[in-house]
Length: 362
Image 1 (cartoon, one colour):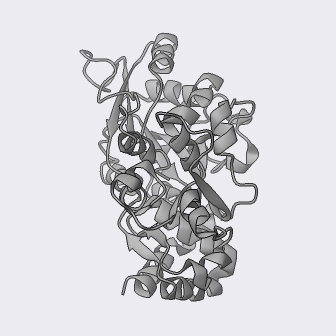
Image 2 (cartoon, rainbow, N blue to C red; image 1 turned 180 degrees about the horizontal axis):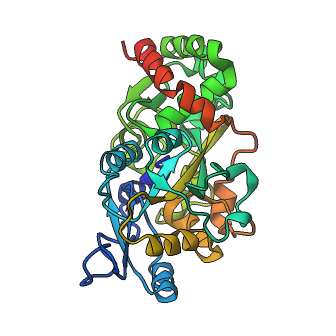
């Protein structure tokens, strides 16, 4: 999903120190994840983040040192993991979401392991329950965000739904990401496919293109350069008051601002949301499978699940996990997001992206 990619970049845009994450190594001196090693290696997209005390707790409880290898955005990281599956870079891969899950499973990326605590994962986030090749870790909603001040100054009501976005009053206001290169961009396309069906979504995108939607390569450019409502976008003099981002983007604009505003400067169009779920799995041919299993178990503990929202700006998947007050206030999950069965995504994703590219980019 690469939901978490925005957090470090957003903090930079707000002029803050980036979030604490496990660097390239949290241990050292014990030779990586080779046989008998006390280091367990997590391979991730470039957005992994966890509190130092939470990492320390894992290392103390498990006896393993945690090493993290960040490897580009979600799609790039998954593809590289597939190419190196016979000699993997690490033991656990984190960051494959429901839009790309079938690609990982079909290519034999993971070996089966049912993590301790899997029975506490909320049912709607579970996947591959017959083989247990992946463990759900977090979830988030791809949604259109809007710049509150821009709309207030013009006395214009922000859009709330997909249908609203093709209305004349919102012409030339929306920026989105390329579905072939960006996880939120793909999620937004899947949201329209879920809303309008296999036959209806191409016509919707023809109308959206006619209404002046702008497409850029990735989330960083869309949110921190083109979008007028973000701290980074203001600095870059972005002129698009609508952007495809996440339901968790507004609280980040509050929590990392100095001084902290009383209300979020951005909002979400809650009728444009698509739910993503992010998974981790024990890599096939992992050199330290026991360490990998211990890490997967830890990702489902209440301690780690409670820690995620303010570090990776995602929502926990475990029953009883606590949401920080600011996060819950400014970034509640969408009440009725669009969803899609991973099997259907697997059957149609590549063709939909190809069709979308022909419709929108040519």
